[in-house]
Every structure is written in C-alpha cells, then in structure tokens.
Length: 107
Image (cartoon, rainbow, N blue to C red; front, side):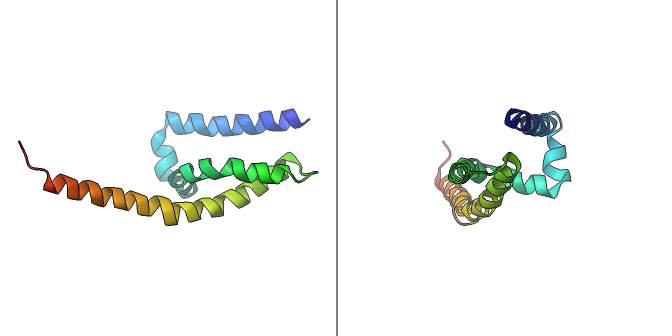
C-alpha cells in the first residue's frame, strides 16, 4: 500500500516537472506559488532531506502526513535560507562582478 502512495506522488511530481519543461513560461510567470517555490528551489533542495530524516524517526506517520510535515518544516527554513544567505550572496556576486567589469581595461 505504501508503494502505491509513493508511486502516486512520483507521478504527480513528475507531471509537474514535465509540464514545466514543456512550457517554461507556464511555471515561471503564470502561477505565483510556483514562481515562489522556483526562487527558493535550491534552499528547498538542501533542506528537504534533513527534514524528512528527522520526521522519519517518528513512528506511525502516514506517507501523506510525512509529506505535509516535511513541507511544513522545509518551506519556512528555505525562506530563511533564501532571505538571509542566498539573496545577499547573489547581491554580493552582482556587486563584485559589476565592480570588476568597471575596473577592467579594454585591450
């Protein structure tokens, strides 16, 4: 029974990925929630397995509850990581590359 639930979620997630690949503008511009998740996708990628590992230690959670709690932990932590680490790092990179290109002399 658990394998059917995992297969169902894999099909749902795979469908979203295929739709996003087939029509990239659909995922990035049309739906704000998808855009929000896309901007934080690296932080989500870094954190979701840790949240899942912590929750797997709790016995008796159904697959659905495990997924819901994983998202409930991952999304707020990903927001913090994005806001306080990733975004400032991107700004610093832009500032560094802009100052570097301004000081480079043409040959």
